[in-house]
Amino acid sequence: MIDTTTTPAPTSPTPPSAAPFPWFAYILLALVSACVAAAGLALTFWSPSSEDPGTVIEIRITAKPGIDLRKLEEVLGAPDYYLELLTDQGSIRTKTFKDTRVGSGLTFKLPVPVPLSAVKELKIWDEETIGKDKQVDRVDRPAREVDGEKFHFALTGYIPPHSPQWKVGLALAICGAAILLLTLLKFIRAQVL
Image (cartoon, rainbow, N blue to C red; front, top):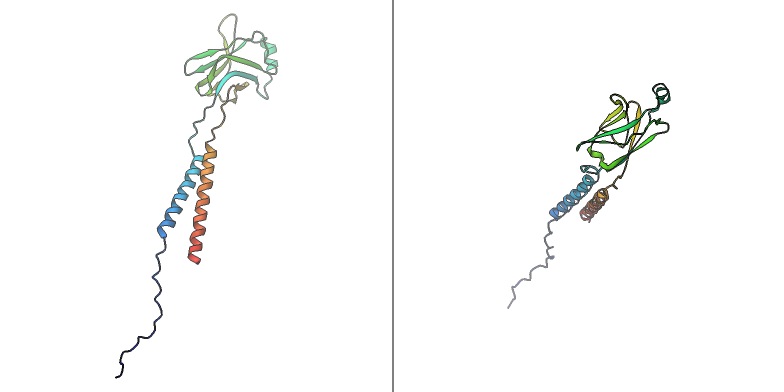
């Protein structure tokens, strides 16, 4: 008897089918890290400034450069200067410096600390013993350092420290950028291999 069974020819094993590339995971990780970096940058640079400008406890006036007050004071006599501070709640008047020349500057202490954001106007008056007081200079919306027509004003007081918010934003931006860079490097490595 003849054996007619044929042995199948040896075949090479079929390779397993390739797994699909995980596009979704890379895209999602890149998108999340880019959003974290963008939020950090926004927190660092574009956040609304709600910083407290602080308070004012005293105001120093000095002669504005280029104006010689001595000549005016010699003609008109020694002035009796006082300040009037107009705020949201009303006006505040400082004590009067009787027969005092500005010289190297005069410092007017306020009776109470006033928030700088509440100050609307600042006026310097020359107090007259007979008749109406004469306005010498004024400034609308004063800042910490500002020039008037004749005087330079320096408003001093408590200035609160800056918010550490920019540090948090910088940390977020650095972390987001680092994760995005690592994601891109891992993606490139997966494509090469």
